[in-house]
Amino acid sequence: MPGRNTLKVYLPQSYYHAYNRGWNRGKIFLADEDYEYFELLLSRTLSPRREKDPRGRLYKNFYSQIQLNAYCLMPNHFHLLLYQKEELVVPQFLQSVCTAYAMYFNKKYKRRGPLFENRFKAVPITHNNQLQHISRYIHLNHWNYKTWLHSSYGDYIKPRSTREWVSPQPILDLFDSMEQYQAFCAEYEPTQRMNDVEKRSYTI
Image (cartoon, rainbow, N blue to C red):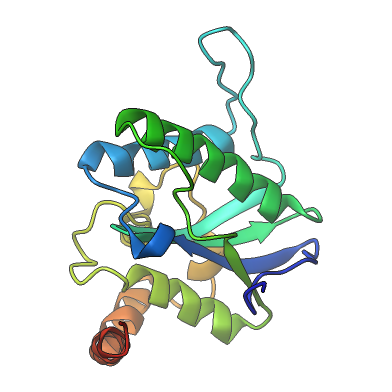
């Protein structure tokens, strides 16, 4: 049975919170280089410059079709905040990245079978307050979110070092300053930590 957040319709010029986790809640990142490879895939598919594989063929690129506004990679799952400019780009982009990563992971760790739990989930974001909160929720996923390297939080608080494949500005434009965004995240951290504990207590 499809999950309730598994969409079949993806509207143009719309935001989506996309996420997925490892099969049977297993880890999808076992080493720092695994996180870095997933980020390499994000960079390769979202940067303005197209790259080629060892045979000289162009990798798939979605720079003109989609934006990555926020993300966080965790040991057994990931969260992405995406803005698609054209219809149906979100599933195409996620399928491309997840397939490439699963092939890398299975080859590296000499395993077979699915890496991710079923199809990714995607939730449409329709209001600015939702957009603000989801970006905060994504960044607060890691307990040490201020120093966690594998998220976009650093792109929000240090704009001069923003990577070209991450687009925080649409979210930051909803705040008066970067400092206000930092405070927005910090003030919600106790609530999210409490929610994290409650969710773990219900997990079998």
